[in-house]
View 1 (cartoon, rainbow, N blue to C red):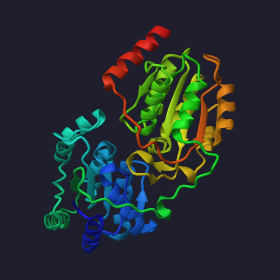
View 2 (view 1 turned 180 degrees about the vertical axis):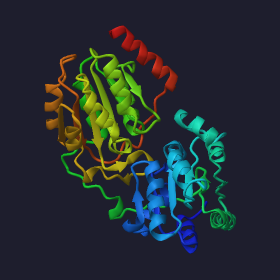
View 3 (view 1 turned 120 degrees about the vertical axis):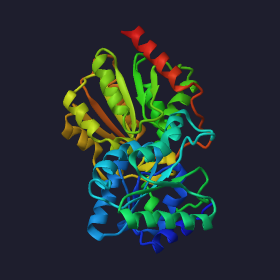
View 4 (view 1 turned 135 degrees about the horizontal axis):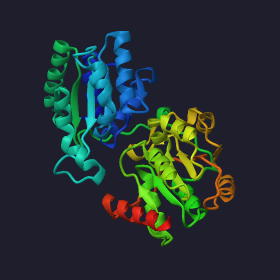
Length: 384
């Protein structure tokens, strides 16, 4: 394994001082090192991967120095446009180091949403004309790989990618202020919040849940109450797009009550989707964002969601009503007022400030995505 401090120092000796990106579980040790050692002025956790490429490009324009952009390989899609229309050698020639975690690597067991992305990761870089190296576990070999990386950048002034397999980086944790999230004793956990939501929802309510822990917790809570899973679409991938799925569903099935269970990192990733909901105004849609101020599924790195007014954004974009709550009593009151099927005056936005973290024994759905899709569509067709 590579010591994250060794890797950081090696980059620093080559003049890399600025880091930005979207956290990934395969890179969490390196991200933790950045949180403790890079300084806030030299490290920005971006809302999405395309934005991180733009941030890095802006840094280069200001300083002439080479930045590093990190991401999970699922985020390559978000980064394609600025990589090809901004940083590419046929456009502005912006030198960047791309560090991508290789989820779904062929031959390595992973979740279904990562498998296709893992198969095409190298091919995507090849299609974009971005040379790459799969990072070695041997630190001497890593030195050679970085020499190749910087030689390419010096000769072409264009991006170079480093792909990190699972367990490439040795474990490292940082518990300092950079990862701190203010916790109120009254706050519920995310799972407790989802439990309140499903218990106070009508039997006809359908749910679109965001990627990560929220979908896993929703699945297990349905098991706990023997409710079945046919009314839930678990968006196991496509981070940030659950609310758009819910918008289209709500508009096509206006008599069906629809709830989107979203996360703060996911909502921030494609914040414009809230504007689309606010303008289209589906009366039957509830958009509930569980805000723990963290990328909880990939290491707990902080988001900026606790520093902005999400309910205010919803109000300004046109949601009929928007609220921010953090106690069970406040949530129950809102859910009780808005639980009657088919008689909502929405769209309704609720931000629930929740505690960071999840159960250590939290399981995963036992059905595949295609099975989830089929039973969900059948439930909808039988209700309307």
